[in-house]
Length: 257
Image 1 (tube, rainbow, N blue to C red):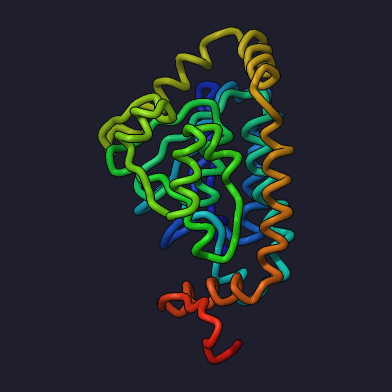
Image 2: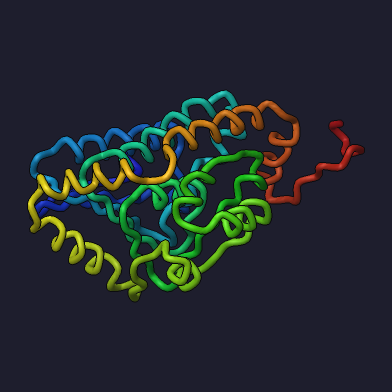
């Protein structure tokens, strides 16, 4: 079985590419493997900057809902893989750049909220459909990107925002044509990689230290509620409806109540 991502290292840049059709959603093993690969890149002295991007129709659709619908108990392993992936990007002392296009959902938001810089194609759309999938999560990372009330609107409604709005709100550094996205990310990474690696490492550690709050602690708080949500019948109904491609029914008189 092929891995859902691949990596190359060139000129001090570790390029990690998510490539898991059809929607670049990762299962529990995929998220765990992604975290281990990012840790490996952070530990590699030949890597000075990490670029994470994706092939296909979109950047990342998050977790594999079908896996969790079939195996709800795996939520703990999915949570662990998500946590470690986002931690590796945020706490790792190599600057990380996300180059995103198409849909950026759930775990894709977690990645973007963990990196240092985001570059987007015009078709990028950011969203957190978690509550419609019977789950929670990524709010801490979304709040690292957008203002508090915008986060709550996105979270409660499931509405997405486009690259232009994300750029206006300051989350996206640049919007570039889709066919120039990779080159733009590598060019920016190259500029950073040419600087003193010691100074860049110290700069990232210093900047992490002056952020408001503890991103990992806030995300861990959220994950406790995700686990709690998965114990409810409404969460199961949300996942079943998603897999069955129907509207979820939360009425008190539905057949299985």
